[in-house]
Length: 76
Image (cartoon, rainbow, N blue to C red; front, side, top):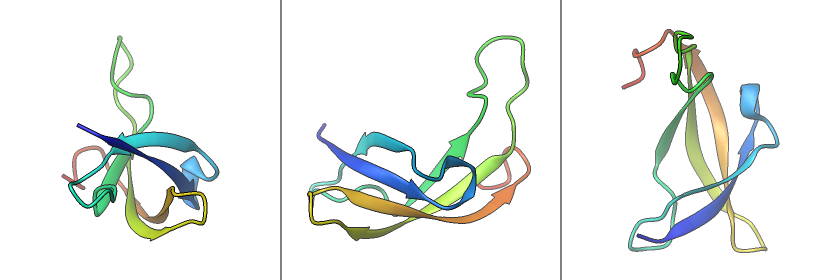
């Protein structure tokens, strides 16, 4: 599986750069749910932060724009 570099814009992950799985067209998923903390360990997972694919940038990466924050599990 290939990966693509994504920069998150807006919301709690603003400015975060990550590798996300890329589809056969080289684009990241249409939507991505960001959770923090990630649910490992004794801490309960936090809310879901929904991001949507925006557009590719000149460096070959993509941006994901913040849409909204939902209670844990609501965005799935």
